[in-house]
Image (cartoon, rainbow, N blue to C red):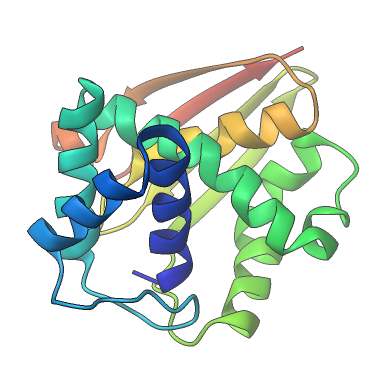
Length: 179
């Protein structure tokens, strides 16, 4: 997992729970004196350990925690990569461009980013179908990123998740409705 994701989690935890809590989490789950550098890669297990403790501290399920984190992550990344987000004039345009445009930009910025595969298609004037595939199975974080994108574009959305890799499906299928 790229350091920028850890930096975002750090910012979120410090904002909501304080520096002491972040330092306790690092002591529990990371090598001593760990400092996350945005462009470097770190073991996924560190993020899972941190996220598990965050979910316990917030008294939320892991899916709820990952959705909340994904929502926050969108804003965090949008601030740091404003020029990429500004290329899009609508929620729908950004969502259907995740794999072809957004992920290509990520590949330019970060070496070996290990991205999910996303296929998003507009079905009608208020529905997008999205297929998510990744060995990491961070589909709930992806949902949060979609909610964060909707907030950015001031869209009201709902997401149904009828197929999920956590239930044994080969991919996650999301139905995004918006107005």
